[in-house]
View (cartoon, rainbow, N blue to C red):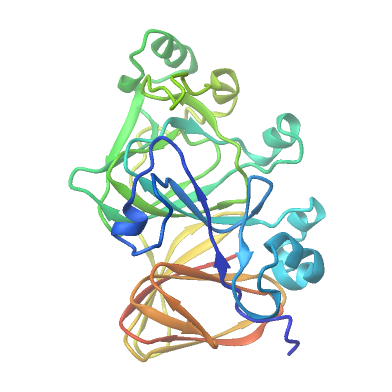
Length: 330
């Protein structure tokens, strides 16, 4: 196998937003610059943030540059639609919601293409790495909410009565299709898998102001175009068990959609996963707890590796009892 194909690890891109904190340092042991950090873009190839390869022959190059060289051999034929638009298909983040994020919604691909140039829509999912007692998310709307009474409530400053809140705990996961009204509330540390997009229509921001004293811009008209008002009081999904013959390995499917599949893989110390990237799709593996090795690449918690679609055979070896997140495109 060509030396072009190996598990890629990355130097993340850090983002400072008003809701961030220091939990990536205090809870995950990350070295951080002074001040708050809201997001760490772990695997990113977007004009708003480019992660650099940290290992191997592509070290120091952007993920976009690697895709230009490897093309579908990197992302796989299942992602040919993204490659045709000059896009890497996915974006992997860590979010430190020290305070509440805004109430927001993301468009689908068709709306984004019509209104945001060559930007993708944004379907995403969250895995809760840590939750303070009573922590919650907003997902969907309350029974009886319509576009008309939603807009009226927003104008009158009483939107909370239309927001569906769900309490979450460490280990929970949330599937967030494009069009979902949502917010991550304070006290949560989250891993996010999403389409490679940074388009957010902010509906309500708790009357906060930015560091310069100005309120953050809202996008009410576009938001109302794309909010799925039929998503009424959804509940958390349940993991779907997957039979795996390998000793010491338990798998559960978390979210599956047109853009990615996520699985939680729990491995006993010393357990070995034997996989193969056959050209159809990249795979992304992240260690959420414990420590593992993907081929020769060590992967402590919480870190991610990108496996090129043409990698061929690979192994994931749990060095300690570990919980991992596996991502691919079906």
